Image 1 (cartoon, rainbow, N blue to C red):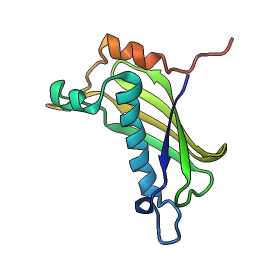
Image 2 (cartoon, rainbow, N blue to C red; image 1 turned 180 degrees about the vertical axis):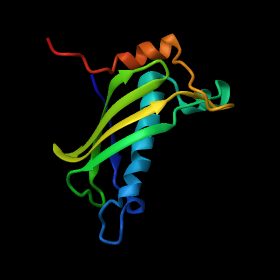
Image 3 (spheres, rainbow, N blue to C red; image 1 turned 60 degrees about the vertical axis):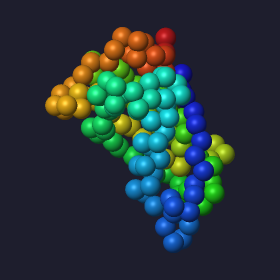
Length: 139
């Protein structure tokens, strides 16, 4: 099962030609992941960071840009959980405009203790919610 949300390409995201400047995609990716935790998992970054003293920094990311996105395109982001580890989370994201692929992403986050930067296991309740968005094997 995947989770979806939209982002409008704004002037702030674009280079002088009106095309999304690629570093701005990384900001959008982070925004989509933050919204996923808040809206789909029910674990926003506010309690995660300030109550639980945990974070989910990116430890790896691979991006493929298929087609340029332009000012005022409405990007539909789809997010799927590929794997939930002890403290890691592998995600696949894609962005499309009217079914035309714009970008695909493979990324891994690790839940850490913000005090010392060590990996922190997912709480059972959060793990179960994340697994609801995990790709199911065929067969």
